[in-house]
Length: 51
Image (cartoon, rainbow, N blue to C red; front, side, top):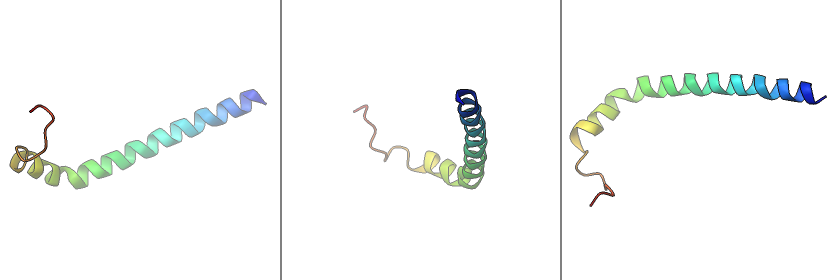
């Protein structure tokens, strides 16, 4: 019983990691131009905690 639960948890962990990786890649590909624009243009306007 414990082995079945552990293997199911392991399988879902792998599936979840793959899904998260796919979502992260999609978000990176779709948001890369916007993120680049933000980094290049409005970086000084960000409320940085260094001051």
